[in-house]
Length: 265
Ligand SMILES: NC(=O)c1ccc[n+]([C@@H]2O[C@H](COP(=O)([O-])OP(=O)(O)OC[C@H]3O[C@@H](n4cnc5c(N)ncnc54)[C@H](O)[C@@H]3O)[C@@H](O)[C@H]2O)c1
Image 1 (spheres, protein in one colour):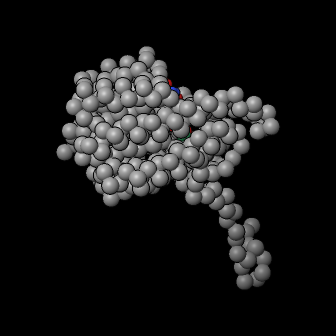
Image 2 (spheres, protein in one colour; image 1 turned 90 degrees about the vertical axis):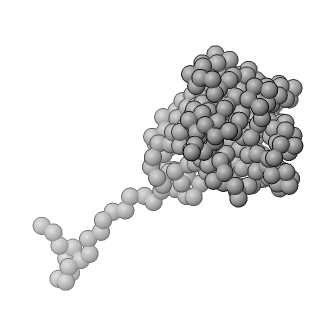
Image 3 (cartoon, helix red, strand yellow; image 1 turned 60 degrees about the vertical axis):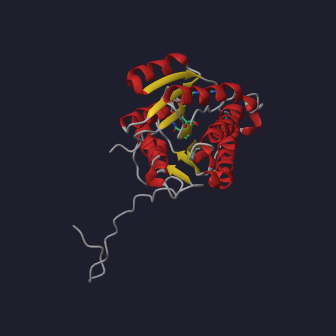
């Protein structure tokens, strides 16, 4: 039996990257999925490709009324809401130094990455609380766990997503609502246009290029009954980056032989 048979899910930012891969996997696993995105073209195209088990709803997650309409749409269209994946996010502008950052994008980055997650969680939970519970999964980032340069507002927003999510995990548990975070590492999507090879070499013990599907598999776990006892966690999907940097290649040292020379010819 598929993992999400009979379940209804919303995936925000479902028109691209991690959200799209998750919507595809959820449908494969028997769910009916509402794809929410500000990018109507990509969102509609994704829903069409997935067939009758999917529908698109144009939504700006930073707009509370639009998010309420999204939840109402999912319930009206597919008869319920069991899984809310608050995944839509933006990176904001990159600066060489924090000293150069005028913080012009603060409101928008916080509005999408933090308020969007907060209001998405709340409006989904208001439905779930009266209908037997559910699973909320919020997208943070390894940028919320490891310190680093650039995109400070993004880092702050994603760190806040973790504290918010673990806090509402406590608050909503009595309603049978589980709340967890995923923290992707460097995943090739339209958001990450840089060459990752060097970054992965420097930072990732597994030395593997993670894909949107890798993240989708983790989201599926948190969405399904397999994680029934799990709430309030942050699950990095990062090839070990937050555990620590890879060990530099060790030189193979040759032990001196009995005569005291290092041997060899
Ligand atoms: N790709 C990575 O390496 C990486 C790493 C850590 C965290 N993340 C997070 O994963 C999430 C998905 O990112 P991605 O890499 O798939 O990027 P992406 O750009 O491919 O997808 C993001 C989607 O969100 C949509 N979106 C943006 N603003 C929105 C809004 N206000 N309302 C609704 N939809 C909106 C975009 O149109 C797009 O379809 C983001 O929250 C991102 O911060 C990504």
